[in-house]
Length: 424
Ligand code: FES
Ligand code: FE
Image (cartoon, rainbow, N blue to C red; front, side):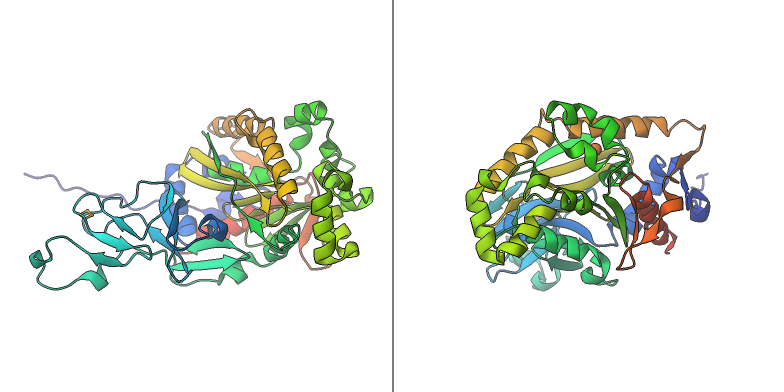
């Protein structure tokens, strides 16, 4: 007699219980079933940052990227169009590309030799007489359903329908615009290569930490002391910087109020105009002296674009979950088109802060892993997010803002997360 195999019904989560306005349940970081549901409802549905057009500048360029744990090929075809392709042969499922990046007109699957154009179309297969009909039109590489590009930042959504990229980004577009204005040519370039940092922690700990302005004074005290940097004051109890929630999960620590008090161009970067004369001359020529000065006083944004793009003043991170308890941060130095002297220093500072022997990211990584281990304890069950609730207010554009050290950004992320997870 054969035994019937009974599949238990999928567990339904009570999101209103797990995610409350000022606390979330610890299991939300560690439950493998929740992670699987996130893959479906977040990573395979919402807009996810994939890469930048400057990573595939020429026809037939390609680079291996990801959406969640899944690899995705970002390619540029002969007409200049950018494609996001799944790395899976439609024949027997082999991965068609093993290289990290390159330039070639086509991909050939190693298993049985099917050949695909850089746009994913199936161009041909060996021994075609084995197929009764020409199936090439039906059998290309899978494509990410929607591709959206804003100021060179390429996003993909695996959902055929949903909000447009512009609707998804909302107020975050302003921050990207501000970032690009730091280039005399108005463009960011992602050309300095990536470091990859893997941590044994859930991806949401990483995401929340990016706009947590409470921890730097403690976790990063050593680098602030050693480097005699002025960063510490930005995150002090007396700071005039603000946290801002843009909606749709996006948040920033807006440091401009502090930089405007200093009123010194390039102070945000720890330097002065005389140290970067070529850059300053080009900025003045591009924007006029008054506007260029304001841009150089304000500096670049510190923004977390849900769920995986973190622009951190001088570098950019892409967060990739590998499993419920493993996350990779891909990090690169931001580069500004037309600013070689500035770019060299951006690369050096990035190495000093998040490089293999960097001072900053190693400290954060230790915190992610300790948090992930800690929440596996059952008492207390909750993660507490009430800091600054009593002093939230609206800015002139109607976005919620709080003090630089408040939990406002996390509260916003969880609100959006819950709305995504409650969807069917
Ligand atoms: Fe790719 Fe057979 S699996 S050609
Ligand atoms: Fe940090």
